Length: 140
Image (cartoon, rainbow, N blue to C red; front, side):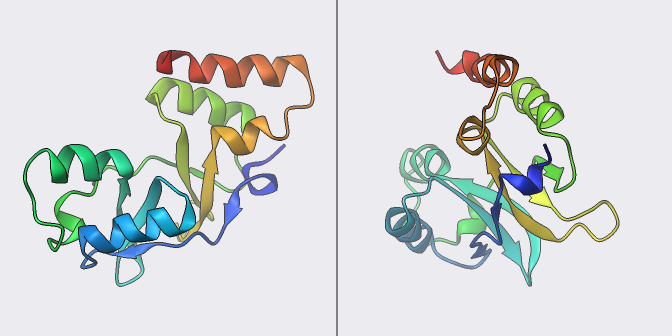
């Protein structure tokens, strides 16, 4: 199974100049804790609800500051045609629950987001289920 079979396609993203408040409001409205950040449609980072708590609130930043000031610049990603098993191993190795999905190695356009939940929703055998559990272990 490929990433493109289970990912959330065409995810929303925030402009690097959006405010931290706007990021928090969008996360609340959509029920998400993760949003890609772009500068002129070029992916430059990601922001999580944890970034808002740890890098903004805990450090006393204003909610009106730009989201780019707290976004994680290192974007972990996979490609839409990657195998789910390889992506699960990558998530386990990187200790993350989600990855940005790029369309291909050539032009690297944002194609979607894949989460452990997306993969878990299509677990159809014990091996795949064990891989999801293994990828989640570091959260316990």
